[in-house]
Image (cartoon, rainbow, N blue to C red):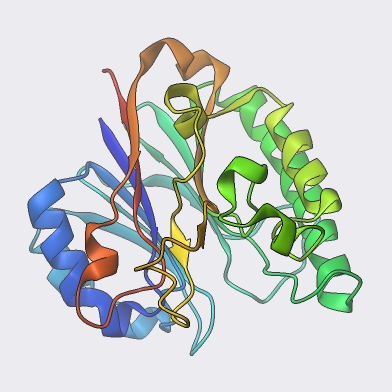
Length: 255
C-alpha cells in the first residue's frame, strides 16, 4: 500500500496538480491539508473519477483536511474528545486494516505568542487522543503537515532557525512525546542524512536553493514497523507552475 500526505495550499487552485500527481504516482491513500474549501465545494466528482473515495472536513478560506482512498474510508472522525475547535484540522478514518489520522497541526505564529501556546495545548490533546487510538487500532498511521521540523537534520540552516517557531524546543518535545506513544518517523526509518525537505518558502528562491524544512511527516505504529518498505519526499510537484509550497511525502507498506 502506498500512502502519501500533501499540504496542497488550496485544493481549488491545486486540483489539477493533485489529479496529475495521482495519475502518475497512483497512491492508494492520499491525505490532504489546507484544502481551504467548504464541504459543499469539495471536488468529489473529479477525485472519484480518478478512482478515489473521499472523506473531508473543510471550512471557507482556511485549514481543511481530506482523505482520498481506493477503498471507502470508514468510521470517519473529524472532532476529538477534549478539543473544542472550530478549525478543521483533524480527520481520522479506517482504510482497509489501517487506522489513519490526518493532521494539519497549528502553525503557532511565533514562540511565546498566544497562538504558540494554543499549538502546544492542541498537540497535547491530540497526543492524548492518539494514545487512545493506538489502544483500539494497533495498525495506526498518523500523517500530515506537522509544522514542526523534528531535529536539525530537517532544517536547511539550523542556526538561523534556532528556537524559532517550527523548530523550537517545546514543539520538538511535544512531537517526541507523540512519538513516545509507539510511533516511528517513517522517513527516518530509511534515511538518516540531512538535506531532505518537504516545504520551501515561496520567497528568496528557497526551492531552487533548497532552503527548506521537513515538516510533512508520516508516523507509523510499532506494529507496522516490520511492514515498512520505503519512504520518500517527491519534490517534482514543487517545480510545477503555481505549486503548493509543500511537496508530497510517501510511505510504502507491505500488505
